[in-house]
Image (cartoon, rainbow, N blue to C red; front, side):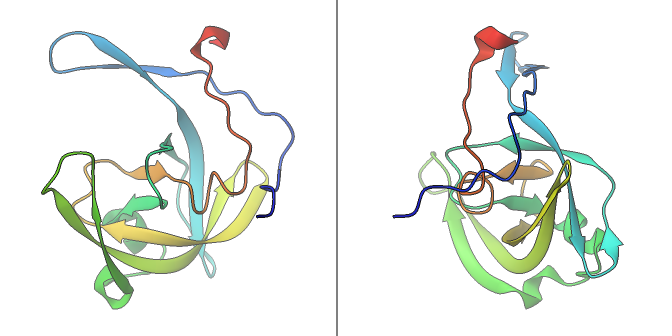
Length: 138
């Protein structure tokens, strides 16, 4: 198995504190990203770094922003989360993921059911970077 390639030098991003429905807070790792397809480029948006996600997942609205008007034309797959029974159809399309000055092709998965804009998963993100989670450095 090949070692992951490190595209960029060391980057540090602080965790973001988000409110929970019970009034408490959680800390999440967010990264500013863009995607592109052809000459179309999204505005910068936050992607949640998620080591539990096998793929990079994006909401369908992000696909439409780069000219993929009908996400269902992509390669179909099904994903499930930690909670048994909850499944979601995904539609794969090749796009370019842009993180800072890095720009590379990924097989992105899109769904209108995704409750957030972006999850950065193992294929397409973690296989490009060495990632360390350390809230103590915040």
